Length: 400
Length: 137
Image 1: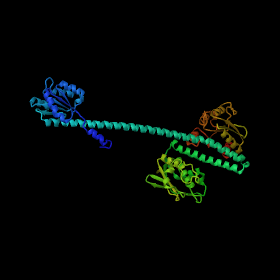
Image 2: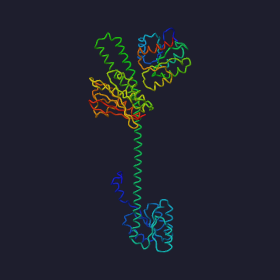
Image 3: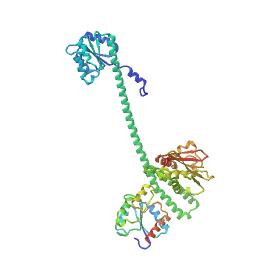
Image 4: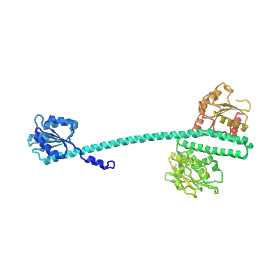
């Protein structure tokens, strides 16, 4: 039995429910005698003294087995059996004929070759009667049990279907909420640009037109405003880039990494200026990617590689690829501060920053962009690192 | 066309701050130009279409067009310009804060000459305008 059926339940079912036995005989004495013989089977016994009474009883009850006296006036056992069989509900109900040894009866009995028919010769031997009826009682009980289990299974299936529908509905709601959040993020980030531009613009005007008239402290404050605006501009830029990954439709194509790296370095001024030493492996395997997304990923990884380096150390980055089967792993290896393995998963989440944030300023979005873009391109990414021994970030994509 | 060596510029921009920064950049660029402002797309179409100071076929030398504006946005203005026979060759430069590739693509499809991100530095503006002056001369 499967675990879906607790033991208790099984026992409930196993406690055989009472089934009906219909005894049909025109002789009251025989009816009473057969009833007494069958009483120990513990079932519900209904007696009928004619075919008509039997048909009435059949209208009201279900029976596991019908015992028919063949020799009855008006309607004999065979005629009654014909009528019973005509009703779809009883076409399979077992019938036991009780018959004498008359040749005519035996001949007609042979006509019944159906499985659900048996016969008992008069005089009735109690053990035989009980044994034969008992077989049909057991059969009826097992049929009922199976029917019940089937109903319960159907019920469970219905419940599962409902649960599934609920889950799908919730999923749909989640998707809608998610896309609303995406739209919200996009609108907010986009709408923040205009006021930020105004703050930056007027700050510049102040510095240019009134800077000479200000004292050192006032100019210092303006510098602080500009740096704060810069951080905010970076944040809106990164959040827009993050939301763009899902908004833009993408088409994967064969991408030469050399081109993408050049593009990524051109995008970020920090990547061009010495003293950063960026080494690119001579032979790079082409990958299947969306050029814009991959450029963004490498730009962010290179940016991190240079950013998280102790101030007394010259940043050094190695870019290389590793091909395995139909996959290419792009490695960006730095000599920076490294990352505790406990944080390796976390850092790819949105706004997750670890370590000395003050010293190494970031928006907390860069690696989330990488993870999301790589996922969108059907790849995966990760990092191997430990504090003090640099970080080796990797992106895995399909080989082109 | 404007007279003499001065360029006629139409700036379509709903933000007064951005108008201020544009004027400032233009002044600092040192390029001699007359600047006309349209505060939104509808006004730009009205100015270009009829009764403007340029007259029916007397157009500005260059249009700087913002994209996100109330009522009639920059794309709609651009589309309208391209469908006017007399204005079809008018150089339109998009000046926006949107770095969305899809906006860039759409502007190119609608025939924008270039796509510039705000704010426009005096040097950038000087480069754009001097190229235009060379062509005009």
